[in-house]
Length: 601
Ligand code: F1P
Image (cartoon, rainbow, N blue to C red):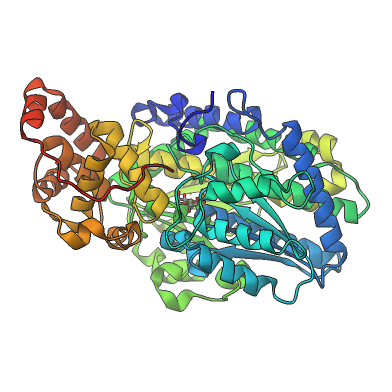
């Protein structure tokens, strides 16, 4: 039976108690949830299902044809949030490979909100299908054929919907593909603001193109996320694997080594086993990271080349997911923007959070490191020469080394670091995809191990800080349409009120008002989101007010008294459960008549 909610928004029963788990148990739960990327979920089509594999093979063939004339054609990868960041990363990786083969680097990326969204969340841009379309038109200008791959894990982003819709009007030029992790029928079916279609409408049209190979849907089900709705996790990982499999398979054909996408997908399972075999050590780092955040410290990832980019991607999602500040978790990259090679070039003038090079870390952060802070170095092989200034600091230090050599030399001065070494079992991968292909693409395996490590670290640390209740992100920022609706569901889940009542509490919290005025009641969701983006603790405040039946001011005071949100939740839920309290609610509660929003994803 198909669930009513998209699978990417369902609660994963495996992680129900992740908020009360110890660090090792947290990593084990994540390991268990991640296994669904390969095993699939229930009886839904998974990565290895026939239709998915057939579509992948067709897309590989199209990619090969596009690449044969790479100076005239292009491949555009597009998405929002983590999906857009992964689009960037993959385009960057494969442009380098194309250059190496003497081909024109023809991979391009689009991300809602532009390049600043590569490290900071800019969710409001995700709701704009027209902007998505305009950017695509610009990116495809002058190109003969364009393979467009839109990524939206929830099959929901209006930015991508606008692009897919445009491609379908220009099938002479565009081949549209969507990557997402829900059955097509569970694509978002809510009219997009200022547009005429729903995501589901777009999906139905796209589905009708599959037979004629003019458009494709890649939507394996990888099961609900370990933190409900946090598509940066499993869905993000699966996105990376799918895109890389397409490109590696296509490029290997061009160089005369035929390999099918399925074997490449298989080969990633090795990394899964290698990484999680180090779970004891990973859990030590999770503990350390949690202690840092709990005591007001920050976590800094410093990485070399694409491992640094993995760090920046992981850090960027902490703000919208956990209501973290931009200083809580930050990523730095060797050679900063020079190495990043993003379209807009250096953005370091935009603000301190855009100063991303290790040199900038050394000047801006290193002198002020406190004992509560945690610095995590992400390296492959033996490339890191620790800065003596860092060694002398009292902050916590972790060295994460990932490579494929059991006997690899470790950087000197390793003693001051908690040291974690992950060794990729290259012989197992080589058996599947051959040595030359492995050697050429080794980097993608190292990145994958780093992604899983960092996802465990940042998720575990925020759980320890009390930012998760059960497996729900109780302090997410309702900063786009999808997140606004997710916020309503979170409230409903805990207070049992109707959707309309929850919307009222959410708006009261957003506008910091006990009585909403006409404007506030009738504005579109887009306006609520704009205001919400500037506020902190929107959901916890709304929830506390709805459970305690108090004013917004009192709810905020309650939250201020107890910094651990999980504890606030437990206290208020306990309170709300008392009979007396429920009797009071029934007697006193008279919901106002407010504008109704269709509650859907
Ligand atoms: C895009 C996205 C997520 C982010 C948050 C808001 O989602 O930016 O990456 O974690 O949930 O939405 P999607 O379009 O890939 O489903």
